Amino acid sequence: MAAGPRARLVVLISGGGSNLQAFIDACADPAYPCEVVAVISNRAGVFGLERAAKAGIPAEVLDHTGFPSRESFDAALADRIDLHRPDIVILAGFMRILTPGFVTRYAGRLLNIHPSLLPKYPGLHTHQRAIDAGDTEAGATVHLVTEELDGGPVLLQARVPVMPGDTAETLAARVLAQEHRIYPEAARLLASGNPGGCPRPAP
Image 1 (cartoon, rainbow, N blue to C red):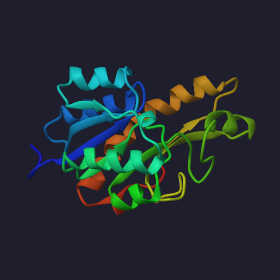
Image 2: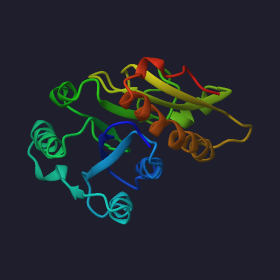
Image 3: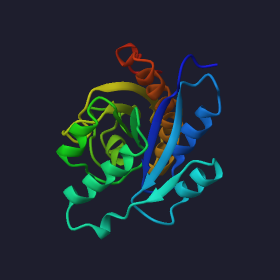
């Protein structure tokens, strides 16, 4: 069994929630030191909400289109998050650029996963960019969120080969499998108070 209370995770989603599922699966192990206490989506009707419901996790929708500004949405989102007293906030396919005030509020406990070997290829279309550059490897990076887009301190990385004939879709599938492995592990290390002990890029 895990020693002491489990770290409380609030997971933010915008879509299918495959990384959310990785956390749900990890939390099924009583030795895993975290638990997902809430899921919040900025879009209604996404499959990630069904994943949460099936797992018995409280979930809600906070539609960003109902707010006049990015700042007002982020303020309302933070209020909802704080109701659940999170230790760590997980961005799992949450397709919003967060305001500086939001990032500062959760500094040191706001995690994101990005489908490239940062600092390479921040932003979008990472897999096609890796293929176009002739890279022999690609991967995923879990990092702490700062005001710099995809620029926060790296906690954990996983690498995959870029295969001859890869498309962005086939490479993305290979990378996603590694995302599901390293994201819960990075949260475990952060919850255990040992983010600095995260291994550097993993094979």
